[in-house]
Length: 198
Image 1 (cartoon, rainbow, N blue to C red):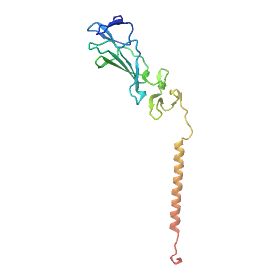
Image 2: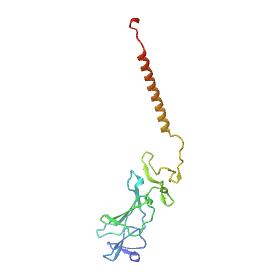
Image 3: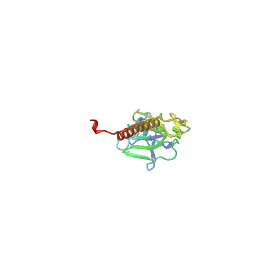
Image 4: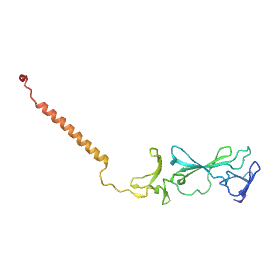
C-alpha cells in the first residue's frame, strides 16, 4: 500500500517507487524492500536433472538488514496442474538471515513444452514430465489423448499392434518346432532295428 511507497533500509538509504516485494514490519510500522526493482530476477531450475519440476526466480539486492546483509527474495514455482492465480496470503519462509523464499505450486512453473490449453496444463488430459533420453520436457497424455498438449483424441487403433504380431509369429514357430520334435520321436520309436543286418 501507500505505507511502502518510500522505504528506508537499516543502512539509512531511502528508496521510493515499486519493488517486486516488501517486508512489512508491523512492530516497527515500516516496510523494507526485499528486492531492487531495477534488477531483473535471476532465473534457475529447482532440479537441474529434471527441468519439468519447476523454476526459481531470485530477486537480489533488497534493502540492507541491521547486519548490512542485503535482503533477497526467491520465488520457487513448482510445476503443477493448478493454473489459478495466487490470491490471499502466501507463506514466506526466511531460509537465511534476510533471505526469503515463497513456494507456489502452479502451472506457470512448468516448461513451455507443456502448454496450458483451455486453462488447463496439458489440456487437463496429461501430466508434464521430462524425458531424460531426449533431454526435453513434454506432456505425457492419458489413454485416449494425443498431441503436443494432449489436445486431440487419439484414434482408437482397430489394427493389430506390432507386439501382437510378434507374439503370434513366435507361437507359430514354437508350435512348428514342437511338432517336428514330436514327429521325429514317433518315427524313431516305430523304427525297428534288425541286429542281424550288421
